[in-house]
Length: 94
Image (cartoon, rainbow, N blue to C red; front, side, top):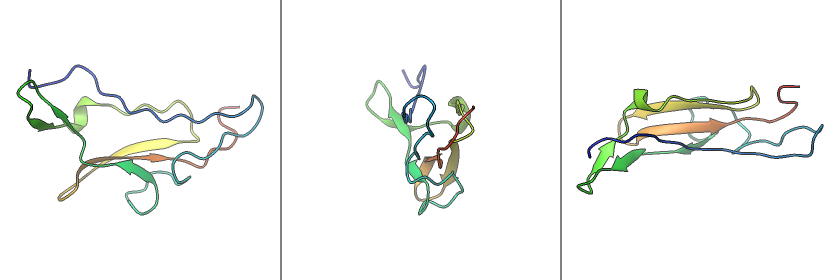
């Protein structure tokens, strides 16, 4: 197999019901600056031949469940595909 069926990266925060959600990562929203928001870099997968394959950017859509946090892909030469994520938290969706 030289492809994959699913890929997932999950970020979770928790707080008591009715209180503000805490920051995720560094608390910064994704902004193309890898010195600010949290990130995973050089995203790839290993195929059945045990070779690293680059993750196609359009194969893993981003989903966020609340406006308090965000995520985005950054594709830069030298660091590979990067998923940047985080956010300040707060009153999410209430």
